[in-house]
Image (cartoon, rainbow, N blue to C red; front, side):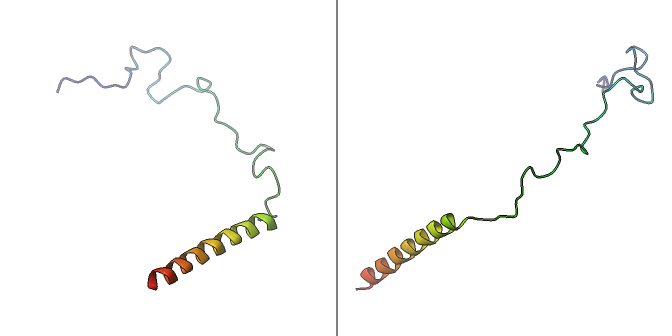
Length: 75
């Protein structure tokens, strides 16, 4: 097992201290508490009437088709 560790050797690499990265070397993490967090608009409205009516009509037409098909096949 002659493999070399993929971690940099702190003796050969500049700016690497044994305990980790020195302060100021990396940028701070992204701030998640800004004023633009959360939903962008009011989401309490729900579905409109027209899409629900259209979906209901499609469901009824599909059900009527399968019932008519079952009646024709049974004859």
